[in-house]
Image 1 (spheres, rainbow, N blue to C red):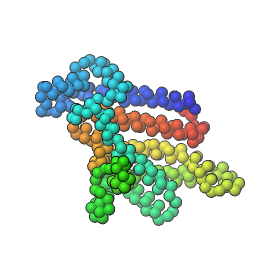
Image 2 (cartoon, rainbow, N blue to C red):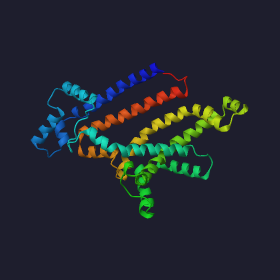
Image 3 (cartoon, rainbow, N blue to C red):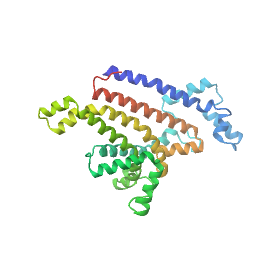
Image 4 (cartoon, rainbow, N blue to C red):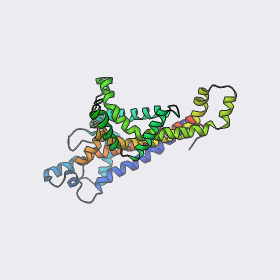
Length: 306
């Protein structure tokens, strides 16, 4: 097992290396002066020179790359061109809302997916989740705001409160973003869970376990769920693509100060160091999630090896 884990980690390093190279070359190989692209058309010569100096654009390309990689290895993501604040500090200040939305969405989706099949609540939620595939995330968000915040006055329209300020204010402002993202994510998990469970429950070893007098709960958890979990884990991991893209839109709709909103603001302001950092961070999340999925496979089914 240790050797397998080591091989998977080593295989992820070249992937991140390619991503880092792409991110580094993204601006520097763009036609024109990179400093002028960042500063805009109305920049003064002094501003252009400041950008070139701060990003090391006056040095040879290979020197810039190794200097940049060296800073990355020391967790130095650069300094924002707009706010003059270290990028790592900016991400640290914005990461709580994004993690809160992501975890609450996954938790809600798993709870709904585990609900009893055939009840009216189950059919209602699944019908809404199917509708969620056809409607953009921002439309769902604005619709929920109109109903529950403006018409019914049950929840705040926008904003975020840290959980350190109290559980009630935190939950009040996380409910609508969570339900907005769950419209899509719940359908992925619930439908795959049920399809996998139906296939597994028809297997011979499940019938044998029932014939031995093992309780239904034990049959489901010990025999059926573990064997049905491999495709479900895959869907949960691949669903992070929808989740990350949805977080960006949702944070903009609900005015949440998360990393998704930070990315949008950086793109609009041409804050290149922040854009670089967010691309690297997103890629690292994808690679890490896929690594964890591969590791989970081996625990769920020891026969799986790559």
